[in-house]
Length: 468
Ligand code: SF4
Image (tube, rainbow, N blue to C red; front, side, top):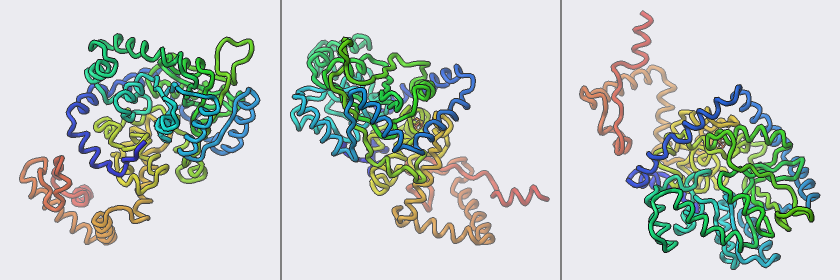
């Protein structure tokens, strides 16, 4: 996937000026939020469950190498082959090699963010293998000129019904349909042929269970099961941090993941896939491969950003983020949008490739409050901002302004004088109104919004009054 995270500001401005996107974002806004709020009330002690989920994920990260070795041993004992990929290029190499070894011409895929990280579809096409996305959202994006997803669990949330109706009529050459069940049936009929033709299925993995060598998949469409059981070859592409020790841990994390993601008590399908097809079994793949991917994750272990590896990809942080909800996911410019993407993209791609993402948040902490595994996202964003300053990556004017502010702030009398004059100046600009339309010293700030006028006196003046 092309990286456009360095153009966040321009992308966000374009998103704000796009009336169709804005209407679609307004329609979807709050749906997952309301459902989650109801679903978490079903659990007596949701906070305690979050703590337990955090503890499980921390336990894994403390000994990640050992749990991965354990998973490799148990999965291999059940007939799977475990391969390791250090980056996107190696993911593609492994999957293309597997496809060649088994004479694969068509691969059906269920949702895998790692395949987006690697740009796997392009590599498969270049190798003569036709990849077909079968998650309904991903399928819509694929037939719309390979548009990237804008949400990690609802990839097509930025599109409206009319757009999809037009797209299906154009691409499928069928009469235009406007009811969701009709469109879904049309997609299902088109995809069924691909499921039956495909020689290989490619899936992601929500969790890898070390004690059994299984991959757990959580889906709401039947496509996940078709992808993983119908073709003779199944390839799981997932991150190394997805390993968990036991089935008991899985049951705990599923309670958190599904409620936080879609607000369901349980998703329509929870599949636990273990090993290759046995002689007495009627379905399942003859060949099972796991491609376990690093792509920057191992560097986070032991760092001050290790907590980010607890992420179970539920999407709750973006569902609750006022910035994401206003601009949608494409503005973030890479695979992962919202607060989790604003942390992961600079860590995986480099701070200089995502200069504005750590600032793409109000730090309101909604994301931190809802994260099911208690990742302190605002604190991680703040740390990234600090790193940008340490590396002189912020624009010169901003650095000079902060230096000047720090110099003044270290001199209390000068600071008091400055704030007094500053408040007087802003009140003069406001001229009795409660908003300032054009901020004289920083007109850029008010180009797309008003600045609130100060209410009377400075904090110091009020404090001094209160003391008397
Ligand atoms: S950071 Fe937390 S809330 Fe966001 S996707 Fe990951 S687990 Fe979910």
